[in-house]
Amino acid sequence: MATDQPVVIYPPAEDGGRRVRIGDHFTGIAYGLVDIAAFVQEAGLQDWDEMDVVRSALVEWRGGGPDAWAAVGPD
Image 1 (cartoon, helix red, strand yellow):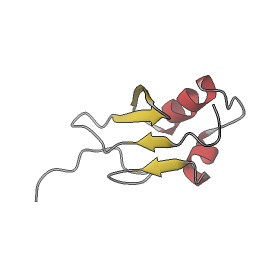
Image 2 (image 1 turned 180 degrees about the vertical axis):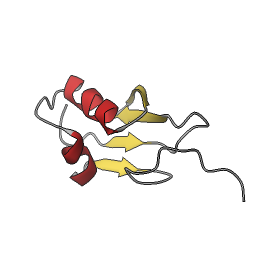
Image 3 (image 1 turned 30 degrees about the horizontal axis):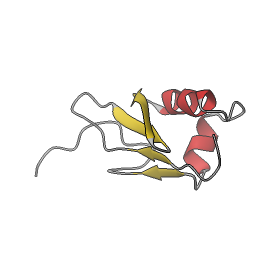
Image 4 (image 1 turned 135 degrees about the horizontal axis):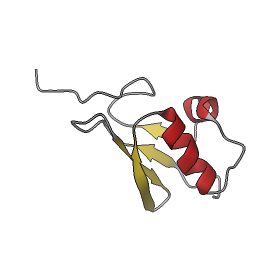
């Protein structure tokens, strides 16, 4: 994975899962930071862990940050 390929974490779905995209490819649905770390490791950054996911500017969080895993309903 080249460092110029952003990791985008989409807002939580109704089941709390969040779609994960690395570069141009959707890599799967994450249900926690461990899942995102695994996707990033599979993409080539084997030494990444959950804290790297939380801290990296390479990761773009949409619809809530690393603590948001429940769907946000209408007000």
